[in-house]
Length: 75
Image 1: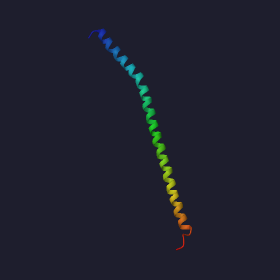
Image 2 (image 1 turned 90 degrees about the vertical axis):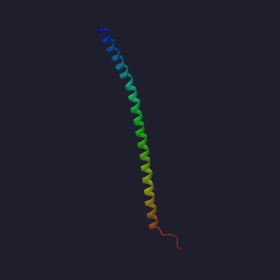
Image 3 (image 1 turned 135 degrees about the vertical axis):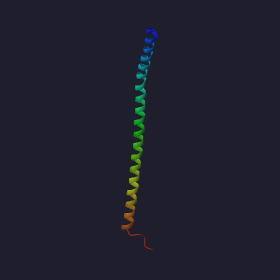
Image 4 (image 1 turned 180 degrees about the horizontal axis):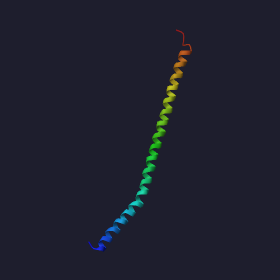
């Protein structure tokens, strides 16, 4: 291998690595934003489900208490 071909090989490898380094941060940012958005949407969905479930349980408890305390229709 001549010194010139060795230099060209190293130069092309350096250029390839530099271009990859410039391209990857953009992809990494898009991936990170996509992941954060997915987690945020999933968290909001879980929180909404928890609130709805809590409201249903509380409504059932209030309804059961009202049935136990209030007199029912006379037969």
